Length: 59
Image (tube, rainbow, N blue to C red; front, side, top):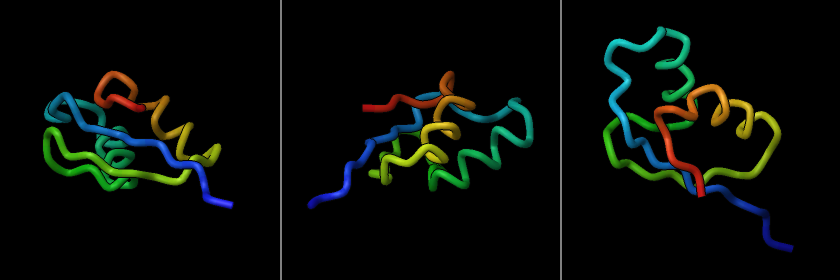
């Protein structure tokens, strides 16, 4: 059975945001604008996406 994934893209610059939000982006593996990562769909990842929802697009 294949694991479910979420595609996350950084769409807004983290410059000027809180340090813990920038750290959350690093935890998601996002460093550059328009960079996309496919991450495993877990409650922890969903919580991180929710925290920085104004900076990312999730599909």
